[in-house]
Amino acid sequence: MECFWTSVLFSLVVADVVGLQCYSCHDHSDCQETEVCEEHQEKCRSTVMTIVVRPKISTYFLKGCDVSGKPNNSISHLSGDRVVFLAEEYCETELCNGGVPKEAPRVGDMIRARGRNDNILSCYSCTAADKTCNNSSLTQMRCFWPKERCVDITSLTDPEESPRDQERIKGCGQLSHCQETLGFHNHKSFHMIKCCNSSWCNNDMQDYKKDPLPLNGVTCHSCEGNTTHGCATDNIAKMQCRGPMTSCLEASGIHGISGKNSVLKGCASPSWCNSPYTSVYKNLGSVETHCCVGDLCNSLIIDGQLRPSPRSRASRFILAPQTVISTGLLLFVVFLLSSESS
Image: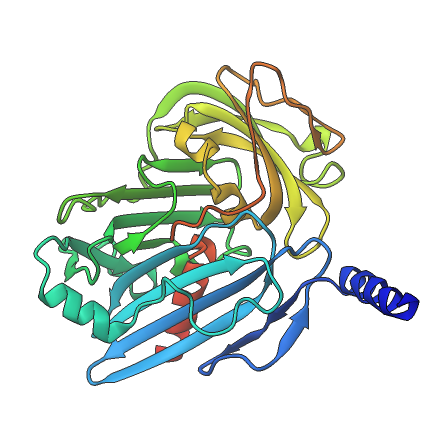
């Protein structure tokens, strides 16, 4: 009996030291390989891209370890003569990302559902990859699932962080926390996510790079990095906020690649403050977020640690809500798609 309990305790210690295991691949076939996650990676990720070019259907898998706090999302859009479906799902148990995500499309089922359902929206579709988002006449598509809404995603960052092909995408989707316009910007990036519930409602043609949103009168601190590089005292700048970004945001979390603490400051919409998209776009896990109203009020992070104010709206995203592609990763896969076709 003593040997039995010794072996049990040993196995628990080894499991704790080894860490979470996830399936890992980026290929046209599902995973057989596995990887052991780093200490700061608390989730397994599964991203599936399905491309329909009648009569051919092909699937691309992207799986591995990731940080916590990112939501399950899905989106569909047109790319030339192809229909592209993307779905992403996160889980937190051993090798839980096997197979196809629950929200990934079963294309046959979706086509049948669209054929017999009158409550499916029609939306505009475009991607920056094929340069269709700046055309005077956007492509129209009918969604494939009753739960999908029209979506419009903009992501403008430094060229070294994200290729220009990833700047804009429109289509149909199920995106977490997207009841109101989600927006964030600082001196390095501009992100906006909009979802709407009527056909062709995602018709916004504004080029936010050439024609920025109007100033709203709010000023916030702006920085991105850590307390020695990027968000050191000398790096923190003042920024005038635009459009619906009327709150000042500061956040800290563990960076998904480096595993080190990272800090973010800038302007955010109130809806962004209560969403997981700081984790999505900045690749931060275990994010602690503080939003406040008032000029330059986002000054609570000291030595990389967030000290919440009793009057602040502070939140901690540990577990992603189980609603329905990490938008940043979604756009990365779109970039892969455009590269394959070139």
